Length: 504
Image (cartoon, rainbow, N blue to C red; front, side, top):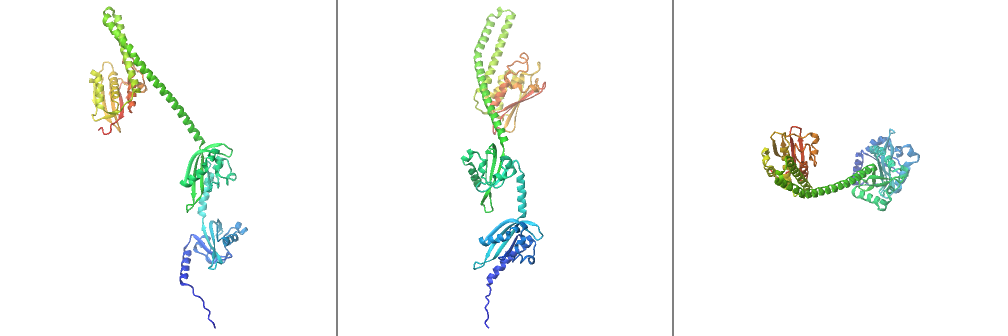
């Protein structure tokens, strides 16, 4: 009797198969099993049991169509999937599948053709993944997007064809989903922008940089234009391949119109300011010219009046001599007014070269011009304090402020004035404090204007230009001036100028 020889299996092959079987059995997140060529289940792993609810002894030998819902069974979808896999080698789908308890889950299914060493088909490998959570999240996201009405949110394929369309897109652009899905997004652009190739440029920029943002005119279905803010974002898969674009459009026509109005008003304001500056410059030039030209006749009036008083004063009666005195006083006041106007015009017109100035030296120079009145001024100036300014202008400003402080006191009382300095953050504050008649709060702004006087010439003589010179001079040097005062309580004028770095 002949003994039939049975070939022994290759030990290494058996070892590899055991490792592969162990690996498959350890997978719980995927249902992995084998079908015979007719679609009946041959193997069953723990992942399949967890996902579909069947034990191995319940499902092995049954047809895999048991996992499909009735609608798919009606058109024999399981057979169609096996046919495609047999012919092409692979079939992939996402759709509903059914568990043992009848519940549905959203599944990603891959069916792969299995061949033996001779190339004959021996069955199919089937891998199923439960994507219910992802689908639920996508559905929530899609529902959220659909409910947005203030933004047009839709997706494009890599070529720019519209693939989805939300309610906001319908409201803003005027197209219903069935009218626009499948159309190229360039139809939202103006003819000018299409001629320049802007739609393609936007997609190219989003592909290169990840996103592209722009503002511009877009066109609604009815042909009307609207100003839009557009953001296009490139979408890629896990391997980095471009899968399409998301596009968000917002209608900001109202904002553009408002900005256009603001720009128009700003332009008109600039024109008015320029015209005002031109007028002011002409007025200042006129005042400078007039002031300069007035000095010659004033000198003549003063000179001839003084000569008349000297040569013929003894021949005039008391009334005549009083008239001459009044002419001389009026000429002196007029001359002071002209001088102050020239000083004010000079501050506006002259170029100022700013340099470090010692505060103590500027105060001392101002006091020197006040002569005997300086004895009523008490100083508390830090000799280390220095400011950036124009020396002659600062001296004139201090002279005017200290002079006013000495002048505006109650009749019969000795004036008391204190000048102090203090370093703040980046500035030096110089304060001129008096114990005089004070200034009512409602008048504290107008005193810095030209010719604004709060008192009669007889009580407190002056031209009404001194504080205007103070304000203009300090501002030309990049500083500020303010006043704190109450009626009968005196006044404090504070100058602030940039401090010299390292002056302390």
